[in-house]
Amino acid sequence: MTEEKHLEVESVEQILNIFGNFDSNIKIIESHYNVQIVHRGTTLKITGEEENAVKAQRCLAGLISMTANNEAITEQNVRYAISLVEDDMEDKLYSLEKDIVCITAKGRPIKSKTLGQKKYIDAITNNTITFGIGPAGTGKTYLAVAMAVTSLKHKEVSRIVITRPAVEAGENLGFLPGDLQSKVDPYLRPLHDALYDMLGVEAYQRYVERGIIEVAPLAYMRGRTLDDSYIILDEAQNTTPEQMKMFLTRIGFGSRAIITGDITQVDLPFGKKSGLKEVVRILKNIDDIEFCTLTEKDVVRHPLVQAIVKAYERDDKRKAERENDKHSKQSR
Image 1 (tube, helix red, strand yellow):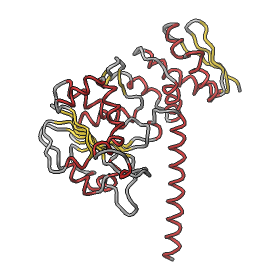
Image 2 (spheres, one colour; image 1 turned 90 degrees about the vertical axis):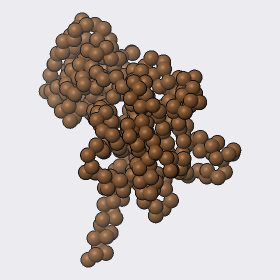
Image 3 (cartoon, rainbow, N blue to C red; image 1 turned 60 degrees about the vertical axis):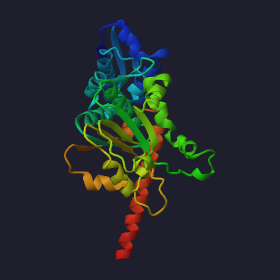
Image 4 (cartoon, rainbow, N blue to C red; image 1 turned 90 degrees about the horizontal axis):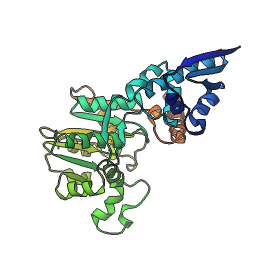
């Protein structure tokens, strides 16, 4: 049965923000819920099957709450609002836009875009060591760098140390041209890019020259104690248990550490255990250490990335079920 729902918005500007360029945002909602949405002045009218019209109304209400913070509504916001409606959590959208992590060199505010990201930022704020575990595109590394830069600017730490293991993902490190630093630079490029975005190229280079920022392979961390530092270990799924222990024991007084990784993308040689998988089991009940798990719902890249992550998760689940069935038959 066709229903008609209404929503009042404070201003025409909010309406335009929600509709997006060429009504692109509203078309996503109409297509997903099979409804029609029009506005007359500051009134939104939603027409469609009752259940769908109610869900579209709730989705729009969540987006309206975001506009109260003068936030520009994007396609990502709309798709995330739709996913929250399914979990009856669209009322949480307002909380995402209040806390700015930092401002980039170009003046763009960096904020949490999902509830998972907000939980991740809160965990970093409240703990000495935080593990951010989740698939590609969830902002694990970018938000970690943003938090480190903010802490440095507020003089809470005196330097930033960012590292990752130089593990080959199908490529051969030995055949890359140049010396060791040239060979490992491609592995560190995503970290350099994030710092360029936060600080600008010139400011970043000054910090590096003065030793305030260091971006280096994990092997360079051995034998050091890092006091008064913000330390980030990226791609931690490619550490061995021994490397993970070595990294965690580098942390000195006045320091914070963030360890990020995706346990579904381990590039270690066959038979080698991932230090990230092991550390979850070993350290899960220690105070001042928090494990924050991000999911495909926290992916903030192109919608196809979320679909790809889901497809791989389904495939991994099927493989695990087949293995369990195989072991069950062998044990009989």
